[in-house]
Amino acid sequence: MKGDILTKIENSIEISASPEKVWPMIQWDKIPEWYAPWKKIEWTSKDNRKVGSAVRINVKIASMKAKSDYETAEFIENEKVVRRSTGGREKPQGFVLSVPQKMELK
Image (cartoon, rainbow, N blue to C red):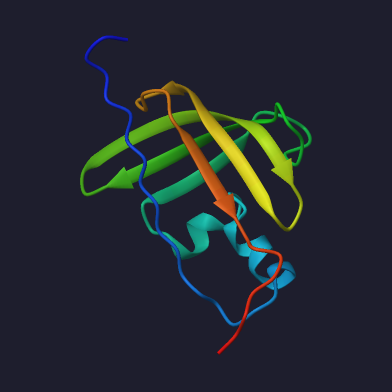
């Protein structure tokens, strides 16, 4: 659309652990355990590890509460998950969480 600006934000960290150990902690069910603004995750699909699965995130930042809906667009176990916004307060956007298969540890 005219006037819309697409923004890409990237961030990365190095972790001295295998993808199999990191992967479970970046699954959306676990994020509320270590990221305070995410209060609740509600899966609206039976199998949350498949393309097309749907999830609602309940967020609270300061006094603001919001709900956003997402759909899984891509899922590769222990490697990558892509979710895109389908409703709620979020404008259409996507999240990509990935874990490299090979890491060089220093």
